Length: 224
Image (cartoon, rainbow, N blue to C red; front, top):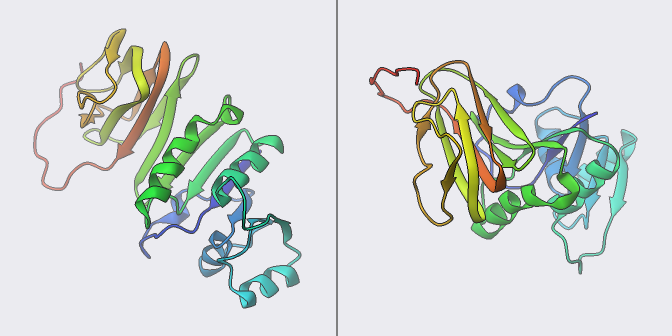
């Protein structure tokens, strides 16, 4: 099962969300993210959260559509997105795409990125997407595969400590069983050399940020 979770973070109106939502996706609105889904012409199957940022008219429209609501008190220990991710994972989602999670408040953006390390998401393919960018988590016993074009940027950022045994394929500056140290910028701004790239990590967490080729880039890439 594939789930798309729509959060309420600030998103550019030209965010190209269509490329990430597939027919048949289980659409989940994380509180006010349900209102954004309606703006995009999507019909959420489920809304979860404390509903403090969902306008009443949107709530009524969703009720009329038969949308399911899972309501939590405002005084809670989890963000609405964390609740949505936990619910989707427990329901058996094997792939999750998160939209609307990278803009707005900085604390929310950072928290949303760190949610990728939740133990309940181990074994689930999760990506946070915004426009042409995507963020995934590479960790031990898993391989992250990226699809794109030569010249597209790929940054590898250790989380919570050093990422050891990092091996890459299809990137201009290849790594072979190497260590990326936490707090250092060595993994920033690598580049795809073809249509496919893969990242493996023996131990630790590695945030993988995949984005478009910078405008005006003219350097030729040599497949390493």
